[in-house]
Image 1 (tube, rainbow, N blue to C red):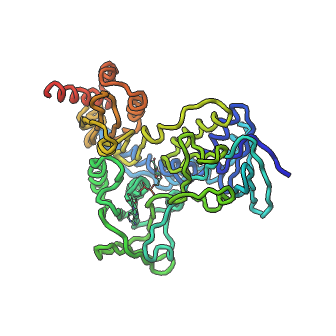
Image 2: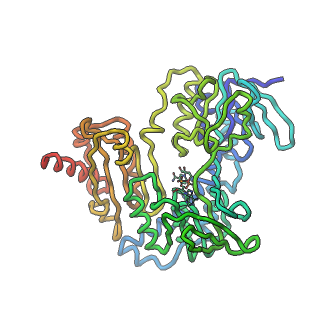
Length: 470
Ligand code: NAI
């Protein structure tokens, strides 16, 4: 006996929820299967709690930059309140609000582990072991997200470490925090915990720079800002071995150089893997690739299985909530038979914000990526702190803004900003990249005075000066 829906979604994170919701909005019936909390990693152990941990000290730092306001700040943030506020943002790790939302959207929730058992047939194994069989008349969408990956470092699997879940759920701030991996999670959490009172925070990064996918100046500026706050960095440092005294004693990481660093907790943030090994993909002859990611075409379909879609982190195209939701919108329409464009923004125009202070905001290609892709490139750079808006933000407002321009087409291929709050400036760049606005058109997009967005004008002036000088 099957229960039949038009669409079955496995995984109720932001991407899965959106795929189901968009399918419903197009008049299809939809079921969604979730083994843990409805809302997924972003709501409970990612975007939301991490930003709740970062925002209070960011607000304090913003006020401290303004000399007259700084005088009014006589204390530190209330860490207890920060943690309680974080608990509120995650609804205390309860998903009632999101379950109600699904119900309102007309999506039927099945709690349990979902696995394919054949073409368009999915089994749900509930916690009590009972099994329900569901059938999809139109398609199945996989949106199972990712989990923290663990590198093959000797001793690492023998001891208790933290991953993104443990650190975003932390009930107290450890005195000494070690962070393995200077990527997005590593840099954000290093600063959050240093600012929330950890005495020592040490980041160990295998590459010679942090946030290695971004423009090289990003690493220089973020490392300088975080070092100024007392965070230590070991760059180009490979962790060789890890050991812990007892079950909860100090953790020591031995680096390839022979140096040792010791802390009370070790956050492992070296990338992600997709939990696709128990999804029954073998029953339909699909084998996930490296890291468990499932390859899809530009319509987010698994090649050779035009009824099977993968949205969000699990397809490995762009591991960001907003890109997963973008994919889900396209898939919701495609399932309903609406002719949709293939996805491309999740490859060519991905907006990325790292919520450190200063923030990093980037979209599209870096200069190196653009050159590698064969573009004839010119660039312009300017310090956001030198704009009138930046000066008004206060002392120490600093950071580079850079445009990567396609010289013959006169369009923007990519933009990167470092500076306080620059995440809110990014969407203008995203629109420029996606719309392929020319430099001549941008000349008429006048940034208000005195905002930080005036850096746009300075950057355009610079390109013009380069051209006039040429
Ligand atoms: P990541 O890929 O951003 O960074 C991992 C870092 O670990 C890399 O710099 C890598 O070189 C380093 N690494 C790898 N193996 C290592 C080893 N054995 N020793 C030392 N370093 C090593 O991955 P991360 O930080 O785990 O983030 C996971 C995902 O979560 C990202 O894909 C990101 O998109 C998402 N995320 C997004 C945020 C945002 O949008 N603000 C915030 C946090 C996470």
